[in-house]
Structures are given as structure tokens and as C-alpha cells.
Image (cartoon, rainbow, N blue to C red; front, side, top):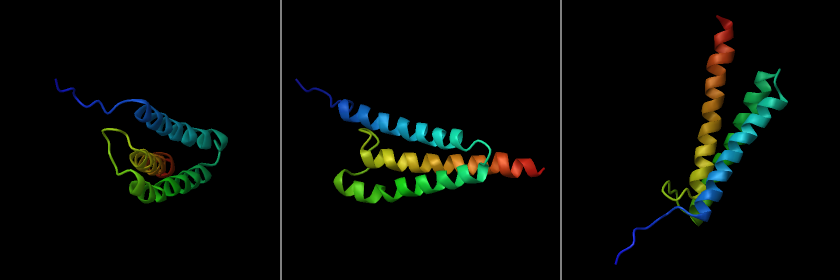
Amino acid sequence: MIYPNDPEGLFTNLSAFLNAYAGYYFCLIMMDNKTNTNKVMTLWIITSLLLGAMVYPLTLLMPLNKKIWSISFVFLTSAVTGLSLTFITYTVDVLGSRH
């Protein structure tokens, strides 16, 4: 009998937790600097670039793989999410307040 491969398990859950923690960290940055949008965006960019810089070395240990939420995939999605959050904040809050 052939059993299907179930990629989900402990490591997938730990990776998903890491991704959720990255989102929580971005939220903490925002909460700590409520009145200074530029500082928030700067810290988000720095954090995202640091996460993004970790992707390539981590792909040497475990290649990008969405199916099992590899650690390199988690760092990549966290970095892209942080940069997207910065772009949306800049577009809506900074450019939107000028009009």
C-alpha cells in the first residue's frame, strides 16, 4: 500500500510560527513608534532587508519550498511582507496625507 507524502508536521508548524512572529514583530515596531511614521518605515525596511539577506545562506541548508514551509521560504515571505507593508504605508499614509 502506498501512503501519500504528508509534508505537514512539526517543522512546518514551527516555520509557520516563525512567520507569524515576524508579523508580530512588525506590529511591535509600529506600536512602539506610533507617532513617527518615517521611523516605522525605516525600521521595517531594515528588518526586511536583514531577513532577505538571510534567504540565500538558508537556501544552501534547505532550498525554498512552499509545500513544507522551509526556513528559507519563511524568511523570504517575511521580508517581502515587510517591504509590502512599507510600500502600502508610504502610499496610503504619506502620499495620501499630501492630498
